[in-house]
Amino acid sequence: MSERHGFKRNVDDWWRWTEALQDVPELDCLVGKERKPAEVALVLKSSLSEEDFSEVVEVLRRKSFKVTEEEAGSRRCLLEITLDGLEEAAESASLRKRNSRGAVTSYKTAEFKVNGLSIRYMTSPQEELILIRHALFNIRPDPQPGSEKLKDWREDESLIHFLRRIDAIEAFFPMHDLNEANQIMSTLTWKNPIPTFSTICKVQDYFGDYDAVYYAFLTFYVNWLVFLACGGLCSSLSTSPTTT
Image (tube, rainbow, N blue to C red; front, side, top):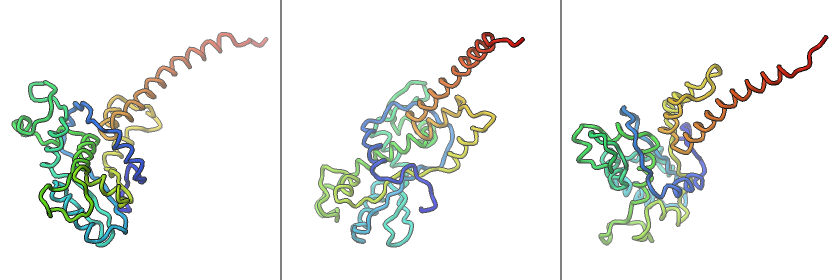
């Protein structure tokens, strides 16, 4: 994991980012291709006992997450939500998608599976990260007595909130997909430094709406500055003093 790249290394940064996503926005786009599943890195502190760490991993696996531990005793792991877990999160979060009839509606697994479309065919990396966040923040302890071995895990808090409360999280951030990131960067060259509409759409799919709006505004602003600069240059040349 140390050789991988993450969006943010500081747990507080991504925590503020996830806290701002209280509601899943109306997301309506068809990515149109199967892609690599999004991954989230979870690094727990060494103060967490080995038994509790194993129980955390077991809880995540029971809740539709694939957990890949970097090495034994490292407390570092990569989380990837399963297809069933992603569909459940999309339905639970009322993800908005356009169905086969062209109507924007809340995601229903049974309805969308009729067309044979995978949920990853219809979601962008950013959307999947939002759904992973939704799934992680809705993992609650099993109501059956004795089913959970984590001490002091309250019924009204998620697993992530519990780990944060006991100060067990060292880092918690989404991972970069370098292929996707490089495809975006490859569209920007010294010959074409201004993002095109297609590039902005890719930024939206990968980084989210806020970043896409930022680059869309910069593109609009720079394009209009070109016209103003041309007008200013012509005005400057027409009023410049002539030499005799």
